[in-house]
Image 1 (cartoon, rainbow, N blue to C red):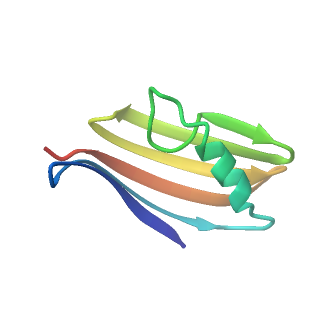
Image 2: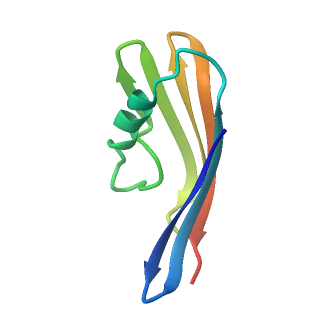
Length: 95
């Protein structure tokens, strides 16, 4: 399982948060590929990675709805035609 939380703080006050929970569903999963996809995060959707990212036989997808203030999303990774990873995330403005 993969789980975590991101929080933006200012002066000891949490302003924004995102939670995520996912799992590897098949092999060959590549953490290096996931990191490469996450480094391509678009400025207009600063949650996880881009809508689509491809490298070799791997393809990353990320779908989100709403905006930075209140959002939900889902990402997955395919190796060739097989889904090998999935993750759900959500978050938004706290204060």
